[in-house]
Amino acid sequence: MTDATPPMSSVLRAFDVLTVLWEVNGAGPSAVARRMDVPKSTAHVYLRTLEETGYVVNDGGEYRLSHQFLSTGSRIKHRNSLFQASEAKLRDLAMETGELVTLVIEEAGQSVILHKETGDRSLELGIYSGMITPLHSNATGKAILANLPPERTDEIIETHGLTPLTSATITDENRLRAELETVRERGYAVDWNQQVQGMGLIGAPIEIDGQLEGAVGIAGPTGRIQDEAYQTKLLQELRGTIDSITIKYRYGT
Image (cartoon, rainbow, N blue to C red; front, side, top):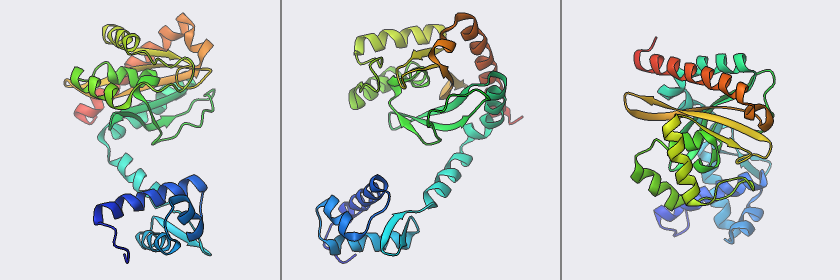
């Protein structure tokens, strides 16, 4: 690069450019420069350099993110041992229940959807692999938070806070900690409208040989998931799926 920006700052600035391109769904050097409050020449240098990496493409002077991100993300996902052990089992669970099924892991103190499967009556929620949400805002996240080492749970709450996604999201730390204790005792978590208004979710952790690996969730309309008889049925199928995932993860069968 031709500017005098220190190397570490250059890396951060490059990611700022990527964020701008994502937010505006493509832009030329002038628009990027205005958004970032830098000279047009500087924005152009960053855009051309990112183009060389393959992660940005130039369509007639307008730059946009390339599908190289999709390729990289897919490779990361398919390399993950938990995904490999879970994919077929999650598909079976979605077919059996007809609901939306998610596999979630914790990364950098947040909930990441590693994979999803849809059933024939799944809610259309715009959920996708790679989606990041606060751990405290959904049942799968709470199933993870409840089973992390206490010091890690404390660190996540302190670092990320308890941001509300809906009016039902738990934002009181004492209330959250009480719920996490309940989750530990009964082995699963639920939420009603806490991440998405109208969505209910039941989630349980995947623990293999004493190591927390992630969580599996089943989502549906709040009223349907709240029905006690149906919830009991879902929980039974959820636990059976997690048992199968655990066996396949451990023994590769």
